[in-house]
Image (cartoon, rainbow, N blue to C red; front, side, top):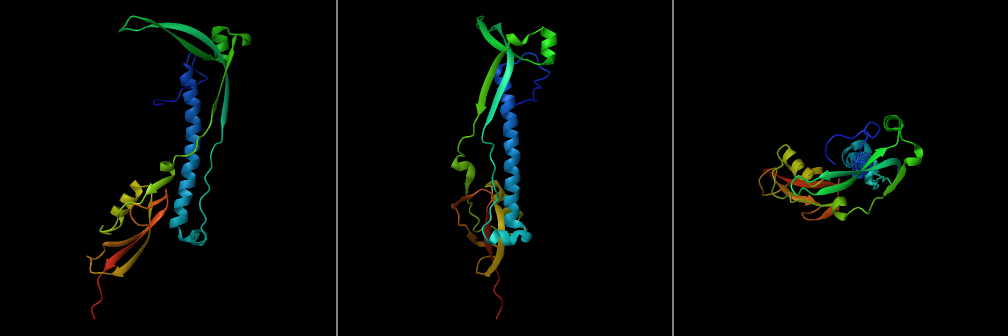
Length: 203
């Protein structure tokens, strides 16, 4: 949902989708914070030399998931009629007033006049496209300062790993090998190691 968050404590009349959207957005923001933390740890495992011993034994970042959120809201329901300006037809719709101290005093509501809205937000299995990515082709790319190659990898959700050099008849600093190879499927956040060409020492 776009736009600023709605303060459910201050708003008087809301549609049910506004209420559910705001709660769902809060859950999504919390889940995103957990995912970003795990992704940052995964990147550190592949780039921080102080964590090399963990990388060598195959340690991976732990990913956390909010398993389920159950919401139960006390509301007062009112029916309203709106005229469609184009068709001139009347369209009934419902508005929900959250039951709190503000709405109770403003509208003189009583607890017996409220209804309860309950719903659950349950995660579904992560699509494979959200977990895996395809390794882009780096062969033939010039290393330069490495920023161009890093940008290509970042677009695929990957990072640049180790860089080794090997004598070759290719122009100097050209990527001649990469691991994993192009079009290989790998986890998001993994690294790609490259080998670049260097001039052969004159005999």
